[in-house]
Image 1: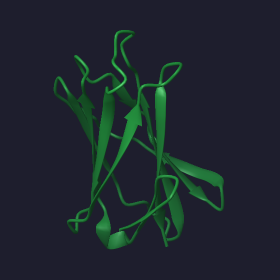
Image 2: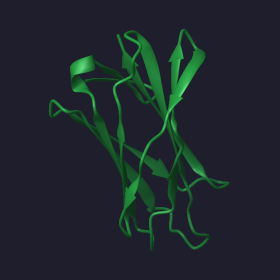
Image 3: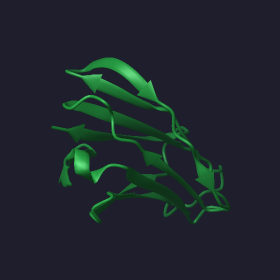
Image 4: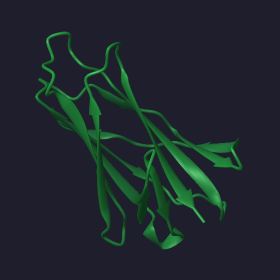
Amino acid sequence: MKVRPGRIYEVKASEFPINVAVEAKGLPSCQAFVADSVITVGDIPVGTDSVTVTESDLTKSYTVKKPSKQKCDVLSTINGFFVSTATAGAKYVVTISTSTGDTATTKMSVPVVNPSIAVLVFRLS
């Protein structure tokens, strides 16, 4: 997996499935919500793939499946909500792990207006 700016992750077919964990830091619970993955080819949506989320008090995890298209982007959107009493240091830490053992992290900080949104782009080429 190659990490590019803008939360773009260049991956190979062999790196799927990709596991994503969203962990609340400095928050009483994990109020992150994950949308179904959207598959795009040339910036045109061509399908969706449902995700199943497992959760504990502070973490939500899900798996991004290998798409049927060979050259495409798989978009994974996470909406992270923060309580009104959240301190400036509160955040969601997103850990991405490929099936080949590569990992990457990104974070979602306290927004001016809820939610903080992260769009992860898994670029399959």
